[in-house]
Amino acid sequence: MSYRQFFRTSLAVFCLASLASAGILQTFKVGRQPTHIGVNIPTNRVYVDNVLDNTVSVIDLSVNKVTATVPLASKPAGLAVNPATNRFYVSVKGGVAVYDGVDNSLITTIAVSGNPSIIAMNPNNKNIYVQDSADNEVHVIDTDSDEVIAELPVSHPGNGIAIDQ
Image (cartoon, rainbow, N blue to C red; front, top):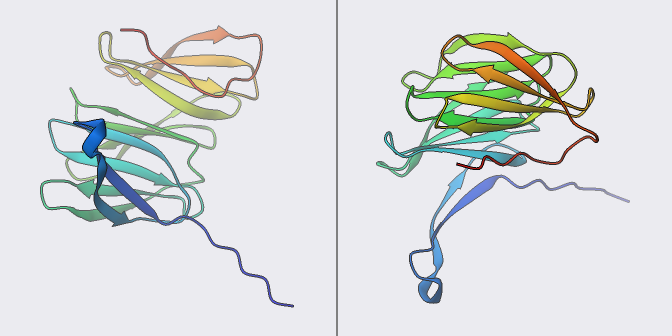
């Protein structure tokens, strides 16, 4: 008996200007098991983490193609974009990796305890919030200093973070 396992390896971009005419505009081939997406509107780039490849695919929508594949130190568990600084953040084992959106280079890795996962960006105060399912807390990171400024306890491991602007 043969066994094959198939993984998602593409990202579809939809036009939702009108629900009556919604449809797929473009499909991009990315890595295996694309999971989290971040969009940088000013640069027209989309970042997609690929869990089974330990990479981030960078899609430039101005040329409609994947322009880079960024290797990660470990499996990604969350991704967020800061359009104001043109940086993207990826939660990896032991911390949050900070990348320059111009050349996709690693700037630093911010150490956090536990199991960092989902990331949300607050554009008003430029903080990112990182869910930690191992320690039942949310790490608050100041993106100007790239330092953890607070650890907020939560009652249960979460499954996502939303920012109320």
